[in-house]
Length: 553
View 1 (cartoon, rainbow, N blue to C red):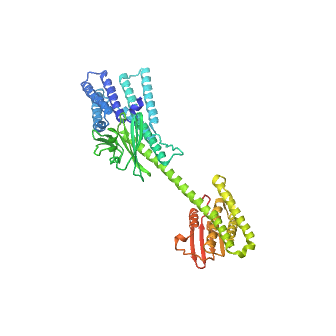
View 2: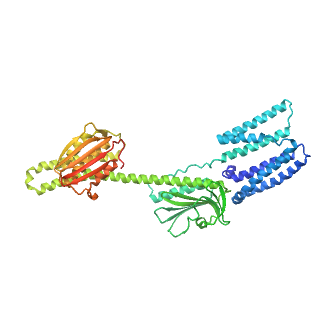
View 3: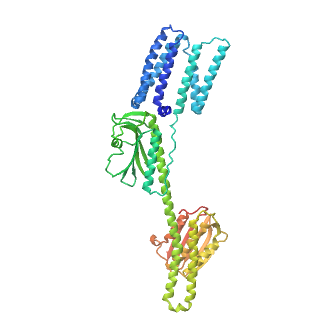
């Protein structure tokens, strides 16, 4: 393991090691003190010697047990303060230097740079101050001025040691840096296989960040009863799917990130104030026990598509920092799952809207045109007296079908290449053509009152043409209307499209009898539809906003 891996995200180890180094440096400085006859210095040597033994013991504890390292943290902090005061008193009082402010000012400069900027500025500040201190001492000695070289060297050594400690604390005061999880989805896979691959990526990510050699991810979909178990061990990867009751209680005790030691019933968490707390482990961790992971890190996961747990084992030297690290990993994985789920929902919604839009277009064009052709052919069959004019009628039907064939071709071309630049259309001529074509299909008459100069995007014109076609077809086919009035006018910042007929009407209160295709198309355009129907006909009042983007299909 590299030196960085030994200390990264392991503040307990670093604090213990720096404490031992500083106490050792202090003891060496006192031991070689030129004025070694003062009794207080002897007491200081004894005090520092004992404290050095305690510090070395704290290093061993930090290396071997995250539980005791956390439990002893407050005791060691109090001991640090007491020993500092006592050692300074017994070592500095003899030299009348007890009130020297140089270390306090040096620490203040570094801490200020850390809080205002970052660890880089703190390091530059500390190096500059140490360099200036050495330069001033060298000039003093070179000029022959009085200087205590022992005390000068001791202070320089203290400054460098203190600089290392404070810069490291500046590095650690932020949350641990964790690379973002960018899940890669493979095209062409089924939904189940795609999500299984994403969970493998998430488990590999968590193991890579923490350095764990074993990992388990349990996942339950929100709408499925199954439990998927992903396991990674040295040289082995397994995926199993269990039934609903195969592993009861697998998610119990996993409501928060925790570092756990199951055999000793210990856990380390962060409380509501984001402070580490060492607590007894009361709940049995079923998932960890099932896979034989006695000590490790448990991460709860939750997203819109389901919930799960990651258990990481065989982590070298974990400590309190791993709880914070685990929270970041859990948040990153959950957010990544949410992003994929939202993209999947959007894709499915877009597909559903596209299917609905195509269905409406086919219903309002091809289906209605074919129905109109059948209507006219049936009229020819039932009325033999029209036989002399049958040829002309058949030619008209053929021409109508040819026009509809052209519209179908344009629809197919649009679906194949939808990225073309949007065109601008004059709405009045387009609606006039569509209304006349529909009237010809259904052997009825239309009266048009269309506002001039309404230039709209091509897609918008297409939508309104489909509305008119469907309205004319419904009036002729279901209401047996002989005359249909179509009026288009500006309405505020939008458009008003009113279509009225003299047909037999229908019960407008019955929603199932209302024109569903027209209602859906108007809703997709963000407009409103009011239907009034009676024995004297039907009136559709459509209000549409002015839009530049496509319909919400």
